Length: 298
Image (cartoon, rainbow, N blue to C red; front, side):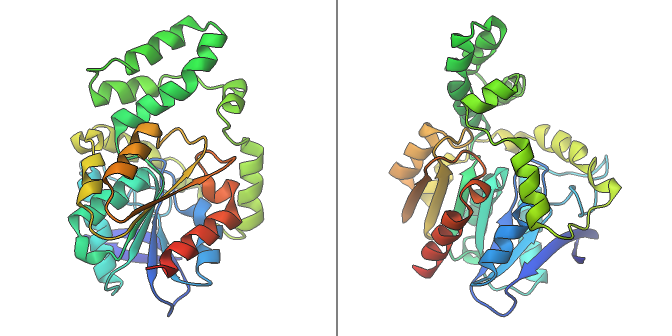
C-alpha cells in the first residue's frame, strides 16, 4: 500500500503506467466513496498513460478526519495540489467523477498551471442543480404512483428561490426503492458487487475503512463552499475540457450540460447511451476509448 504524507496526513494512492506520459489523476465521488471502484479503469488507462488514483483525505485507506479538523472543498483542493508537488508531477489531467467533478473543476480553476486539461465524469458542479436534476428525474415516477409526500418534497426542491443547502437536504430525503431504481436506470447492486469482485483482486480494505466516510460527509455537508454554484468556473478554464455523461445520469442534468455546451472554452461533450451515473462501469470499453481519444488529441 502506497501513501503520501500531506500536512502530517497519510493519503493512500495507487499508481499505474509509471514512466508513461501524460499523468491522469482520478478524483472519486460519493462524497466519501474511495478510489477502489476505479481500480479496473485505472489499470486499463495505465496501459497508455501514467495514472494516479487516491482515496480523498478522510475516507477509506487515507487518514480519518479528526473532529476538530477542517475539510471543506477548498481544503481538499489544497491537498490535491500538495500531493502533485510531493509526487514530483509537473502537471496532470484531473478526471473527476460525481463530487470528484466538483473537485476537478475547482482545482483546475485554482491551479490552472498544474493542469493540461480536465475531464468531468458525470460531475456535480452545483449542489442546487444536482438536487433539481434528481428531483426532475424522479418526479414522474412519484406522480404516476401518487406518492404525495415525495411529490411535495420534490416540488419544494423545484421552487425558484430555494437555497442550495435546503434543496440538497431535501434531495437526500427522497426515498429510493427497487422500482424507482429501475425507473431511473440505476444499476443493480448485485451487478456492481460482481464488478468489484471480478476486477479488484486485493482491495487492501480493513474493517476500520468503512465508517470514515460518515465524518467526511458531515464535515463536507456542513461547509459553505460545498453549496457554491461552480458552473461559472467552466467559462474561466482555458485548458481543454471534456464532459462524459451518461444518458440517464441524475447528477449532471440538462441544465448543467447546456451550461457546459454554451460556456466551456475548448469544451467537448460525449453522452454515453444506455448509461446512468457509473459510466466507467456501465460502458467500460467505450469509457476507456473516450478518455484515450481525448488525451491523445491534446
